[in-house]
Length: 298
Length: 335
Image (cartoon, rainbow over all chains, first blue to last red):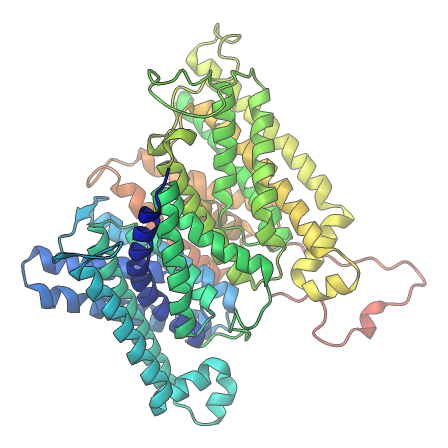
């Protein structure tokens, strides 16, 4: 029988998971909201970030470079992918469905390139976990508290950038109506470049903190975690960081509670279960699915 | 060589069955079933656990459910039923009026999660080690045959099943139901306005595809007698789909040709190549090339080698030609 305290404890873990999911989901929802491309290879960018950190960490270059290299690697790979492959198809008037196919092909290529280089192995990733703190029924390490803090900081910065700066407002305009935004003189190219870079950096960062919490890295790591990230991003509504954070809390806590009760392999299924319920209950709701336009912008 | 050839015949039959099943879902109905491989997998697992004897408990080297010891050909039927039953559940996603890329993403997530659950839950199908020592169909009755002869017998049986399924698919392919499906694929709103029940038709075609997929899985597991979740990765769907897209979506012969090119020429022939690198490297490189191949097909020949036939309804003499009344751009244009 599962005791109440274990459930309470798993809620605490759920908040930590939510912090990780939230960072990934904010990047995904920003990218998807602006470009309208459901980019499956985002999951592989998580892996790219994690492996970049792993390489730096194995060379004992210190904590700061280990942390900083993940978002940089994520941003660079995302930018290159967008400017080459996605741009090629967008120029050919490909629709949203063609582009998810393209992102899947890219996902296969990145996934198995990493896997080939890693020789199919799983690596252990050591990261200082810090002290363990007991607060009432909850157990946190200082590292996990830092993760929660990081998620809050990322959210605050993103919201400030989107709502207080000129370019953030232009970005939101572009995400709602690209044609109108272009007609109003919004610098499309600059904003799109920025979107790819920022979302790629968030993906790389999310990949790093995912493996720093999980302590192992394999070529599949990002794709496994993508399930929760996409569930949270779609649940929260495309292009809405606030929605992504709230949905990440729902997804994170549910998965951890299910893992405590039913076994860890059912935890991600629970995340998808929430998404499925929402899709079935409100398949065409515009408040949940912000994106209603058909064209993609790269 | 004969041994290898008979193996290839079985694999090809199974792959073509799978490709046709995916094609009626994706090509006819436009349902982007990126979780397709789980339907083949459930067929294989269902056939395996009903043909295996009861799980003998703690001393057994593998754990699984059911264990009914059913004789051939019942496991194959069970495989088809299992595929269809799973399709009935997962198909709810196909009936929703979602954007197709959302639908595709949800199917993909289902495939990712299914492989985690099957790998993790040891009680179900023995976890990530998978099942082994699945009895071969009629192994007792055909025990007089040598291994090579048995292989060819199985290859012949697979071919018969494949041709039978093809005849069924060709027959359905000429039906009004199939035309209605394609109409709903090309313009869902218009098909709905004509009174077609788009959601019901999608569910029907999804279940038909699921049955054929399950059947193909059952055929395969009876042949190679072992399975593990590693063989059912989400990427396997894309090997099948690459064949469909390369050959020509919604064209039975195109799908056959594309499957031959991808699954046999591209995936099986390299096993004749001398090994290089570490074991498993060739496998991974194949997937990278499949990714590039996919991109190349989408750029160079998005309709495939043998494109879908363009249908034109014959007008009865004296009937008014309705085409003149359609405003430009309303026809069944390409995507």
